[in-house]
Length: 412
Image 1 (cartoon, rainbow, N blue to C red):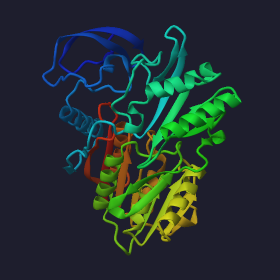
Image 2: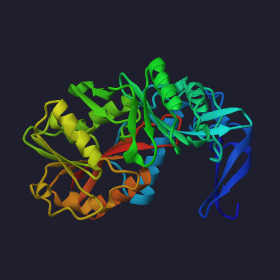
Image 3: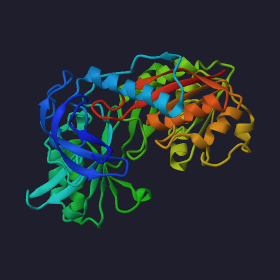
Image 4: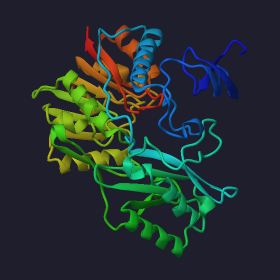
C-alpha cells in the first residue's frame, strides 16, 4: 500500500489473508489478520486460546522449530544488510522449554466498568486495550494462572481505577509483584494486600511515584535470587532490577559466552553494562581479574552485594556513563585481554573505540537487537580491526519476535 511494507500480525510469510489496517507509520503500516485464506505449511494451532486478542506473543501460530529458523535468518540478514559482515561460524540456536519461562514482566491493569472488573495482562495487538485473558502460558508458573487473582486483588482496592500496571518477578524460589498506585491506599487496602501476600506466598511491593519510591509492604523479610549452578553461584535481585527473563536460556548463554571468550587464570576481563553481575561473577571464577562497569548505581550496589555473597574478591565494579569518554578512568588504563558487552537495545556504538583501545583481542557481544548488533559489528570489523568469528541466536523469548543473539569478535 502506497509503496510501503505492511506488517500483518497473525500472518505468516507466503500466506494469503484478509487483514485490517490498524496503524500507519512513515516507513511501514501495521495490520491484523482477520482470516487466513491460504495457510503456510509451518502454521500450527496456537496453544493459547487468547492468542488472537493478546499482544503478549506474536508467533504462537508458527511451529517452534520454524521460529528458531526465522530468528536465525533475521540475524544473518541484519548482519549482512546493515553491517556488511558474515560470521565465519554460525552456532546452533540456544533453546529450552518454550512455555512458562518468563520470570519478569510488566502487566497492564485497567478497571473496565462494562465488564465489572479489573483486567490484568498484556495489551491487545492494537495496543489500546488490556487483553481480557484468564491465564498466560509464557509467564512463570507462579503467575501464569494468577491473572484473575491479581484482577480480584486490585478490584477490591479503594483506588481500583488508579492502578495502571503490575510488575511481576520470580526467582528460583520466591516471587513478587510491584503495584503502581497513582493515589494513596487506605488502611483497609494495605490490610487486603498483606492478606493476599500471606495467602499466595508472594511478596507485595508498592510504587506510589517514581522507581525510587518502591518499597516492600509484605512480608517483613523477602529476597529474590537465582542460581547459576554451573559456576556454583547465587545472585540476588530486586523485583525491578533487570534480569534476563528466561532462566534456562540465561544459563546457556553464560556457558556459551565463557566457552567462546575462554578467559584464562592470568587474564583481565572487562564487562560493560554489567548489571547486577550476571556475566561478571561467572567470569570471575575463571579469569584473574574482572572489571564490571554499569551506568545504574543501584545495579552496581547489587553486583557488589552478589560478589560478597559468593566470596569473589577479584572483581572491581564502578558506575560510569558509557555513552561518554571513559578512557581517562584508572580501571580502563590498566588494559584488558578480553571484553564482554551486554548493552541495551540502542547498542554500544559509542563504546566501540574504547573496546578497540583496551588491548583486548577477544570480544563477546550479547545483543537484544539484531539491528544495532549489525551496525556495531560493521564498525568493529571495518574500523577497529576485528573479525566476526562466531554468532548465533538464543531463544530468550519463545513465541515472540524478540531476537537475542551472541557474537564473538577476534582481532584480525
